[in-house]
Length: 186
Ligand SMILES: [Zn+2]
Image 1 (cartoon, rainbow, N blue to C red):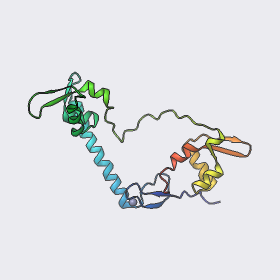
Image 2: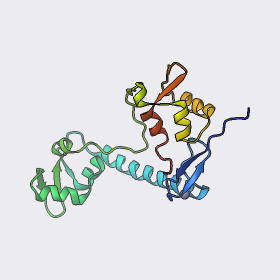
Image 3: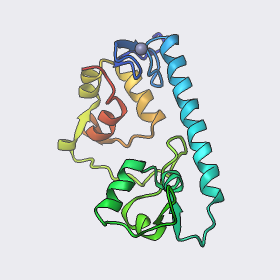
Image 4: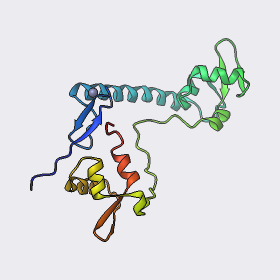
């Protein structure tokens, strides 16, 4: 028997064109699109690093922050901030022209801190339903995602997807499998 080959139809995450992914980590149709994606990730990285620098410079005890600091902290735009101010939703001080400061504590109550998109967060413990009605059999999984069963088992092992055997059937949670292949082109 030959080596199981992974091939799945997906939409390119950059141009949206359908393509045949050769590995589970292939998300782009061409070297050109992966280059674009790489550049975008790098630009995002740089943008966030610059904002991180601003955040680090804000003294912890400082209650009122500049508009640019609020953006660095929470990722909320100038327009949004001014709207909040106009509507009286947020305490502010005006120390002169272009010197508006807004309450950090109040913003904290309204917005989560800006998230670094590339920083890995602790995965939440997952709850699986292994009731057959919430599961695919391996056969159904193969049919739905166009793979043979050795590829299916390989993926299940690789992603530590729980399985349950009842009689001759092996069940895998639908939600997990669908999540894994959710970018598959329709
Ligand atoms: Zn593409």
